[in-house]
Image (tube, rainbow, N blue to C red; front, side):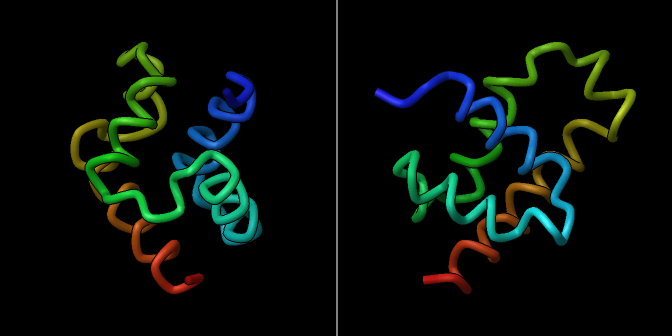
Length: 81
Protein backbone atom coordinates (compact mmCIF):
# COMPACT_ATOMS: atom_id res chain seq x y z
CA UNK A 1 0.00 0.00 0.00
CA UNK A 2 1.27 3.44 -0.88
CA UNK A 3 1.70 6.21 1.60
CA UNK A 4 -1.24 8.65 1.72
CA UNK A 5 1.30 11.49 1.66
CA UNK A 6 2.60 10.31 -1.73
CA UNK A 7 -0.94 10.22 -3.12
CA UNK A 8 -1.63 13.70 -1.77
CA UNK A 9 1.60 15.10 -3.25
CA UNK A 10 0.74 13.47 -6.58
CA UNK A 11 -2.70 15.12 -6.54
CA UNK A 12 -1.07 18.46 -5.72
CA UNK A 13 1.40 18.13 -8.59
CA UNK A 14 -1.42 17.18 -10.96
CA UNK A 15 -3.31 20.32 -9.99
CA UNK A 16 -0.26 22.61 -10.12
CA UNK A 17 1.07 21.12 -13.38
CA UNK A 18 4.15 23.30 -13.38
CA UNK A 19 6.65 22.47 -16.10
CA UNK A 20 9.28 21.74 -13.45
CA UNK A 21 6.97 19.04 -11.98
CA UNK A 22 6.57 17.02 -15.19
CA UNK A 23 9.18 14.42 -14.23
CA UNK A 24 7.70 14.18 -10.73
CA UNK A 25 4.19 13.64 -12.13
CA UNK A 26 5.44 10.75 -14.24
CA UNK A 27 7.49 9.27 -11.38
CA UNK A 28 4.59 9.46 -8.91
CA UNK A 29 2.19 8.01 -11.47
CA UNK A 30 4.48 5.05 -12.08
CA UNK A 31 5.19 4.49 -8.38
CA UNK A 32 1.48 4.63 -7.53
CA UNK A 33 0.46 2.29 -10.34
CA UNK A 34 -1.19 5.09 -12.31
CA UNK A 35 1.24 5.32 -15.21
CA UNK A 36 -1.50 4.28 -17.64
CA UNK A 37 -4.26 6.25 -15.92
CA UNK A 38 -7.02 7.77 -18.01
CA UNK A 39 -8.12 11.39 -17.67
CA UNK A 40 -11.17 10.15 -15.73
CA UNK A 41 -8.94 8.28 -13.27
CA UNK A 42 -6.60 11.26 -12.80
CA UNK A 43 -9.55 13.59 -12.29
CA UNK A 44 -10.98 11.19 -9.69
CA UNK A 45 -7.60 11.11 -7.95
CA UNK A 46 -7.46 14.91 -7.75
CA UNK A 47 -11.02 15.05 -6.43
CA UNK A 48 -10.27 12.35 -3.85
CA UNK A 49 -7.52 14.41 -2.23
CA UNK A 50 -8.96 17.88 -2.79
CA UNK A 51 -12.43 17.47 -1.32
CA UNK A 52 -13.03 21.05 -0.23
CA UNK A 53 -14.61 22.63 -3.27
CA UNK A 54 -14.26 26.13 -1.82
CA UNK A 55 -10.48 25.72 -1.65
CA UNK A 56 -10.38 24.41 -5.21
CA UNK A 57 -12.57 27.27 -6.44
CA UNK A 58 -10.02 29.67 -4.98
CA UNK A 59 -7.41 28.06 -7.25
CA UNK A 60 -9.43 27.21 -10.37
CA UNK A 61 -12.82 26.83 -12.07
CA UNK A 62 -13.20 23.39 -10.57
CA UNK A 63 -15.11 21.28 -13.08
CA UNK A 64 -13.57 22.73 -16.23
CA UNK A 65 -10.04 22.98 -14.87
CA UNK A 66 -9.89 19.55 -13.20
CA UNK A 67 -11.03 17.96 -16.45
CA UNK A 68 -8.44 19.95 -18.43
CA UNK A 69 -5.68 19.09 -15.95
CA UNK A 70 -6.58 15.40 -16.05
CA UNK A 71 -6.53 15.37 -19.86
CA UNK A 72 -3.24 17.27 -19.94
CA UNK A 73 -1.64 14.86 -17.46
CA UNK A 74 -2.87 11.89 -19.52
CA UNK A 75 -1.03 13.33 -22.50
CA UNK A 76 2.11 13.81 -20.43
CA UNK A 77 1.99 10.21 -19.21
CA UNK A 78 1.44 8.81 -22.70
CA UNK A 79 4.40 10.79 -24.09
CA UNK A 80 6.68 9.39 -21.37
CA UNK A 81 5.91 5.72 -22.11
